[in-house]
Structure formats: structure tokens, C-alpha cells
Image (cartoon, rainbow, N blue to C red; front, side):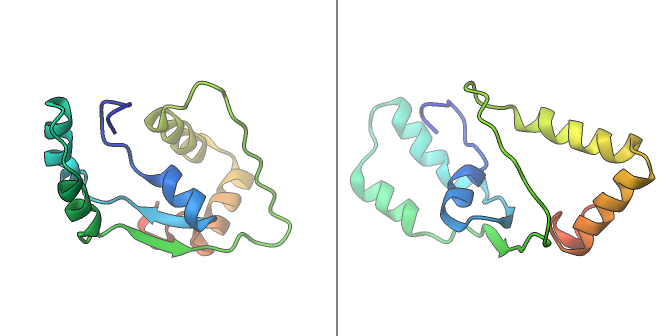
Length: 119
């Protein structure tokens, strides 16, 4: 958080720990006091332990990709802008052809896109 200057989603950490899964972010307010104190160089170990010990209410559901589904990831060596990437996926869904829609709804059925919460 301190390096980025903001609270990220935590998905990268979650993915490294759980592997393939559906993720619902924690409430970023849980880190507010820690970030305020970090700006003043006043973070204390007990404070950090208290925050880490609290319930974060993130949701993680394991998913199994369908047989024959190949997912390839690449590192762009400069990070990514998640909102822009999400917009591109949603545009692909909105403007896609019937085969694209078939893929979208197939993934949705398998809960790879969060089940019925994603249209």
C-alpha cells in the first residue's frame, strides 16, 4: 500500500496464495489507520498485528477451469491498470459475436465470472 500510495484490491496476493479462484475484495477502510500512521512514520508493530488479526471479510471461492481451457498470462513489465483491463473485457462481451457470447455464458455457468452476479 505504501509503495503504491493506495490500497489495491489484494487479488494478486490472493491469487498467489489460492491459485484459480473467484475473489471479492475486502473493505479498504480496514487499512485507513495504518496508512495514516505510515505517512507520519508512526506505524507500530502492535497496530499492524491488530489489523492483520481482524476479520477482513474478503470472499474467496475456488474455481475449476473446464477441461481444454488454456489460460495464458504475460508480464508486461510495467504493471497493469485493472479498471482499463476490466473495461476491455466488458466491451468484448458487449460488442462480441455469438461465439464470444457463448464463451462468456459458458464461463458464467462454471462460476468463472462470479456466477449469476455478472451479466
